[in-house]
Length: 191
Image (cartoon, rainbow, N blue to C red; front, side, top):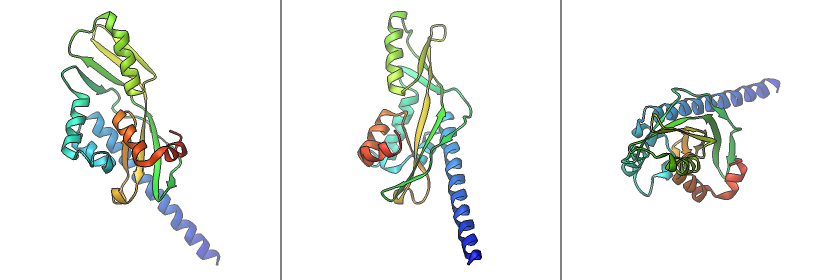
């Protein structure tokens, strides 16, 4: 009897360890893809229902435009980060985990930003990126965006048993999360 109990406990521990290892590996992969601007890899690691309606190619184009467009260029500043993981929760047959990490970015504007415009642009960037602080650097014509990012990791039937992510830095993905899962799941995850 004790042998069965310890065997079950061992198998459960092994399963949890395997799930945590896969989550940590996928988290590093999506972070690296964002850092190197590998938009195809980001799309592969994104929760599929995020781009289901528009299609993966349109999603990749949107990501490219988020990082580089006629108005600005955005770059993540830290080559690696330290990730903090919430408890893994099962809600309505889906498995969730919230990943939090420091993720400063620099936003370079193509046209010279006048001092009078800097405050308004900083406020816009602060709201868009949910940043703690946005500092204007006139000599670089850029803004240093200090933020704590959140990814919601999801494992369900649509991800084929793999961890996939919703990026809460992206306003459209935050909105999609609420549409897909509702306020109850958001509350349960502390978002």
